[in-house]
Length: 293
Image 1 (cartoon, rainbow, N blue to C red):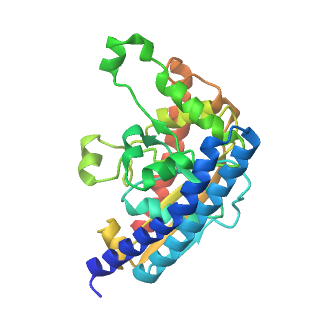
Image 2 (tube, rainbow, N blue to C red):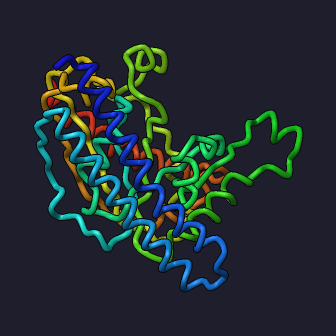
């Protein structure tokens, strides 16, 4: 079957799965919205996560049916569904999100991403993300802050408020440190010192760890490898062009100091944090070289 046909059928199947699964999700979300009792809301939040994990499990069946991908997973079995995790990964394709969900679903708490505020308008998924307490962020530009100094620090305040909901039960917070998908053009433009990675952006990670006030003690460092594949697009993944996906997980302790500093205003802390992230990125780059070269 042609790649695009298989990919299209997979996307249609996932769309109908979403149509079905958002019904119970929306019903619980309405109850959570109207009921003022905090304990009940926490219980409903747990129920929403169960629905979301089931939705991903069905998507995983669809992906494996149409893609025919061979999975090679390393370090997954040592993960714990009842722990708080900060998850980072290299980023090459829109397929990466599906790869992370497929490989990590029910091995760790449900993955939550920081989303741009505008994404709440996405049909079906926007409200689902809101119901599942995905944090919606509004970042202010330097020009906006210069015009209105009261906006300074608002992004961190928003992050902190969003992360307060993560303290009630185990949660996994996900961040693509590169901030964008890898392309050779981007790599060359920023003169990245890494062969297979863009430069990591440490600010968002530092803000998240600080906002979580020490709840995130373990880093799940994920490396996604598409060996032998020059086309790593979403259609290539779903359509069967990508024959193998490797997901290598390393767990790392998050040092206590990493959650306590002021990344924006403390230059010494910022330099230390960037060095910590850079060391992790160097190891990841070496691993990618071993698997791809």
